[in-house]
Length: 303
Image 1 (tube, rainbow, N blue to C red):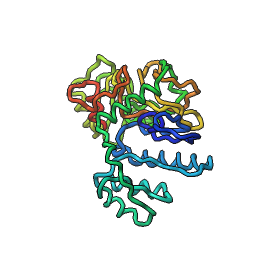
Image 2 (image 1 turned 90 degrees about the vertical axis):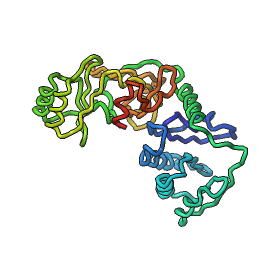
Image 3 (image 1 turned 120 degrees about the horizontal axis):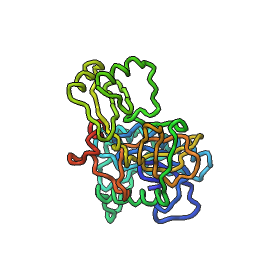
């Protein structure tokens, strides 16, 4: 509720408020995806870092408002790990019945109490949560403009797609892959079990050549076309690893080696974290992995 969507954030309020959405974040940690189930370690890492930073301001007390994922066994493990990492003085389990009884039993060594959730408060639907996030994108991308960033000025983090900061020492292997492909791609990213090949928007590779590359590398070949990066949510940081704001990736120019990002950030950007979520031109979340959305066919395979 505090900070941009797809982040965890904190603030130091100086007066009462009726809506956390109206508060200005003191700092944030970019997670890059809406569901904590897909970023368990990252969420806990962000919360731990922000807790330590907030405590350095010597607040009267610190309240950590967690997400509502609690119902599955994996959710219980996640929340238990979170509590272990944050080591709070008190855990408040907000419930309307006994739905958190299993979780509370896992937290026996912590002081905890059950709080009844008001019956007038309804659980948010998936659609309502998405609508609230989209209001957040509009808020935190207000007055955004497209800015161009040279890749050699940036540290690219969480890049599981394009290999933008990756340098290959085995040039002979790359030359061999290019020969088997029958073309020189814009870029190649080699992962433990996959080989990502980025090619031009209107280029193609025949199936026989793809099979040859897979046999040579012993890895699954994934073709990514230029343009599929458009709309990817990003987190921008300065040289001191301070969160500056969010942006929307508009283009990766592999020839000029630049990133074009739509963002309101005006400070000097030193690092860009790539998220796993896309926005359209109106800052609406694109449906996740729809069968009829060509721009997401690659993402479906990767995430």
